[in-house]
Length: 122
Image (cartoon, helix red, strand yellow):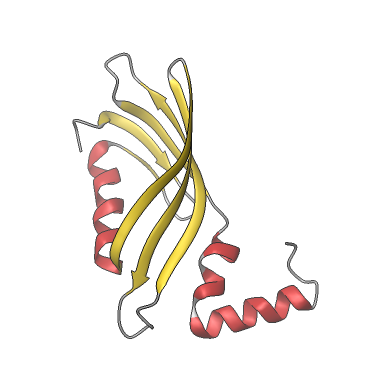
């Protein structure tokens, strides 16, 4: 990970906000323990100077006891690079309610009910 991220890199997503390559590594390690076959598929990339914006699909399957059906979360990442080319800032943007919670068996049904009642926008 230290070949990709600077020692004091910043990472933020809908569930985490950490600083440091060791903390970022823990987030990715946790992901690999929580889901089967995780894979990011970059659909588009825009680069401007020391920054890049990636649009991606995160493909995975839930681990048992949840159904092992292929899932997709759509999102984007904003990256800022240090002079040595490593990532010094990584911010992920995705809608946890739409992209994750709605896919969970019990919670998903409740989220769809709220959306139909107009309690959730989208």
